[in-house]
Length: 418
Image (cartoon, rainbow, N blue to C red):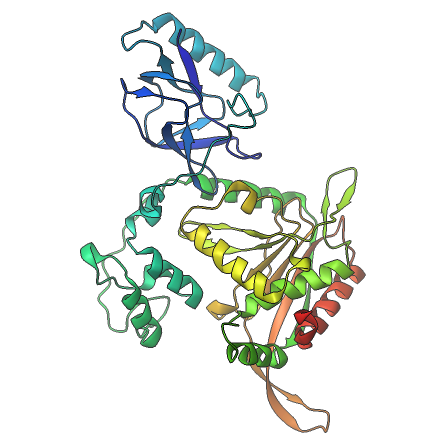
């Protein structure tokens, strides 16, 4: 008897996906657990495995096609030449009725013990769009992430223009001179071409969620200046130790968790009829990807050491850039940190990621002249931190108290070592 294969729900929030690639051909025999296809969700690309056994009699949904969850994508049969005409028509009608009725997405998984698995193929095979076209070795990507270098800015010298580690190291040592946003001085630019770029699933989801955020959340912003000298001194001291290299962002994540534990009302989410104050402090870290943004989560950040947070963030960022994050690694955070300081940004206000009630925007450290305790003008390094808050859950005084605690933690970073 024929069996329907439906577009799976690969995350709690998934409503649609793109069938990026079929991993088997029509007529092939598949067993339970055989990888059927790659599905591009809003955040990653996942390989979906067959829940049934049989011949792939008909591929209904071709590659690069977008489909709703529960939409028919293929048909399996017990024999290779089984007639599926009547079954296919009824299955398509049933699938359409489900979509029309807007039934909540349900993954076609017969048991909780057999969920879809993430791909075990190489990151190069699983990347989509621009990222797949950009060739770089995993080690080169890792070094670039740690150095804060966009991999697309590095000229590759490996086979077929592949970016390898020595290219990233050379870029760090001698970055190309630029004038304006990434344009080499005196370079002859090609003629501009007007083009329509289709929205990826990631960009489509970002557009929908951020529009929802800006239209439905009454947001206000509070900004404080932070003396960055103690923070920089701590980093220098740790760097001199064996393997204790941490970034400014690592310290900010730890300090945010420190402040959230002391102001639990900020560690909350708004749900219409109630405000949920979360017991866990799960801090999302905004990471820029080619064509989008993702926020991998440091779970229980208040209970982890600065060193553990640093190592976890490095691993999460590497997985995000390779498209290997599991859904539970980027969903369900209680607070988000967005840092654009490494791009030379002084100050900005990020958009809240609903249902979270707040997001922290971090600018880069800038020199500033100020009077010391003796009234003598001295230059120091100052950075601005801005809390964007949902006024339905957080009042101005609470936001100010939270930022004051965060400022104190960043200006006394030894507090964060315990």
